[in-house]
Amino acid sequence: MPARETYRLAPPVVLWWAWLAFVAANVADWAVQGTSAGFALTVGAVMLAVTGAIYALALRPRVVADTDGIAVRNPFRDHRVPWTAIRGVDTAEWVLVRAAGAAGDKTICCWALYVSARSRRAANARPRRSLAMSRLRGVATESGTGISPRLPHQAQYLASLPPARAIAARLDSWAAKARARDGSAGAVTASWAWFPVAAVAGPAIALVIVLLAT
Image (cartoon, rainbow, N blue to C red; front, top):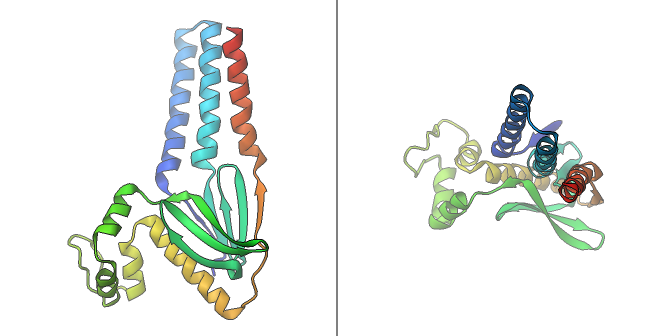
């Protein structure tokens, strides 16, 4: 098991920093050019509301794996799942963690790890069984993959997958090893993440007030 590894995809993080750069450029332009107080207040409230939403929906989500289990941080909810409670990790539109809970099995969607529509179409279009067998034999069946035949078979297989699917396969493997060592399921916990709730709700309320006042 990893000491601590964090998983999230690059595009949402890029979106966050691109938005911050856009906001900084606009603020600098206002400072140089000058603008009316009413306009600056209205547009500033809009930007603040969008910043809170992008933080909650793009920057915050991640999956953190450590020696005890995984923490799934979604926009407004946090889930903690011990390795032994995980019944499987697979993918649909997102990576899905299937866990055993006190009230029965539950499925946790990992907001940070999404599978693009293009990747889903590609996965559904090719014969899965023959592709998996060829990968296990160390044969690259798709031209231009750039996968070295000298890599271990499991590494070749993971390298050929889209990022979210590769992460799901890795987490599923670790969970299976944990269940093999210890059959008892730990407790799955969930809680609200109040900071992103405030980051979205606060600016949204402020924006409504500004719009009503202008």
